[in-house]
Each structure stands twice: as structure tokens, then as C-alpha cells.
Image 1: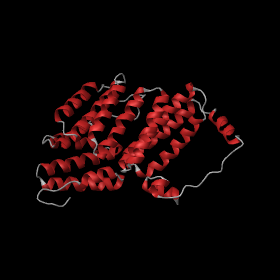
Image 2 (image 1 turned 30 degrees about the horizontal axis):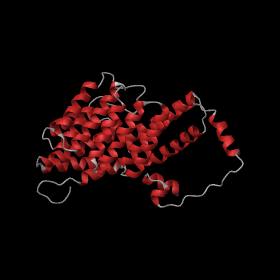
Image 3 (image 1 turned 30 degrees about the vertical axis):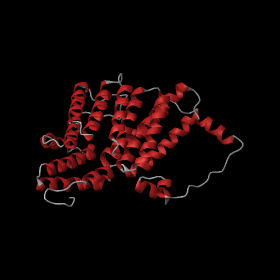
Length: 320
């Protein structure tokens, strides 16, 4: 039952107030010896297998949402972390730490999506530590920037902007795709803080940095292809209360029918509902809110639901 409850709610035993069973203590060292032997079996094929498992969760999350996959992701993290803890040589630990970074960063993002901010922060702390061991500044920059979104959701935009800036410094020599993503992430932070000029300059920089090839083999967790950067800019315009957000976002909807990015479409619908509400168009705001609500209920995004709950229709003191 504990496993079922963890999967349903995307929470740990501690989060749910469930007791944790005490494990017996091994005083002979036999368990350690066994784990060291098992860790020696980790090779390039094993690491590729771990990475494929994490990538599978990532793609499922884009299509179906986070909560039901978080328990599976936690299991993968425990498995990878156990192997890393008992792998001896740095040349073998570094690639394993890289996979742990990807898994932990994804767990942080999915935890953020279900509104578990403490849990998200812990995942990002693990991700940053693992990134340092992996030796990848690109992974460290990405994990640092994503952690800043926890601060954004807490309403602590000043610290979030400081963390975004640090992430960009860390990733200043990273591939152009990551630097473009980092610029856009900082742009969203500026937009939430109401700093229009800085926000738009950051998105202009992201557009300039974005390479023609928007898939990078070392950055499988990033995607800025198609209309995604334009959608992100539209989201920033909504935060800024800019009237042009409506035209920006509506022009993208027809190209977002793919089932591969269901959550992205839901986020755009939420943005349009808020933008039309700001423009005093009650009917359009209600229409987009209803469409967004249907998808949000399917993917289980607490983050998007909370944002939609802040919608107040024109002429109505009650939320939509």
C-alpha cells in the first residue's frame, strides 16, 4: 500500500506521514563486499541502459504528466546512486554521476510540477552534487537554473535571478543549445519579476544563441525545436501583462497538436486564458481556461492548476 500511495501522490513515505521500516545492520561487511562486486559490473552498456530508462520517463512525462512516474524515477535514482556509491575509480564514476544528474534533475522538475517544492529542492541539490562529480559544467548549469524555478514558485524572485545568473556563468562555455536555454530561463525569471527590458533582451539573446540543430547528443533533456522558444517568450509576455502575448501564443496553437508535448499545450492554454482575462475578454478567457483544465486533469500538474486558479474573469470577483 505504501508503494501505491507513493505512486498515486508522487510523494515519499515521509511526505505522506508513513513510517519507514528499519533495516537490519550488517556488522560483518559481507553486504558491502557484495555491493562492491556488483558495482564492478557497471560498464558502458549499463550506463547506456540507465540513461535510456531516464529518457523513457522524460518522454512519458511530456505526454502524460509527472505524478505517476515519480515513484519509478525515485527507484531509478536509488539504483544509480547505490552503484555510484560503490564504484571505485573516477573514470567509471564520472559517467554514472552524469546519469544520476539527469535523473535527479528530472525528478526535481516533476516534483516541482506536482507542487512538492521541498522535494524538488532536495532532488536539485543531489543533481548539482552529482554534476560536480561528473565533471560536466553543462549539467551543473542546467541543474542550477532549474533549481531557480523552485525559488520562482516560492515567490523569491530576487534569489531566483541570482541563481539564474550563476547558472549562466557556469554554462558560459557550454554548447549553444544550452546557452540559449539558460538565456530563456533567465528571461522568464526577469518576466516574473516584472523587468520587461531585461526579460525581452534575454529572449532575444536566446533566439540569437539557438543553433540550427536543436538536438544535442550530450543534452537529451533539452528541446528548443519548433515553436518551443516562441511559446516560452509568449509565457514571459503574459507574466509582463503585455497585450502582444495573445497574438504570439495563438499563432502557435495549431502547431502544438502533437501528443509528444501535451503539457506544453496545456501551459499555452493557461497563458492564453490569463492573457485574455487581462484584455477583458471574458468569453475567450473562459474558453481557454476550460480547455486547459481538461488537459491539466489528465496530466496532474498541480503547478499549472494553481496558476489557473489565479485567473479572475473580467466582471467577476470569483476565479474561473
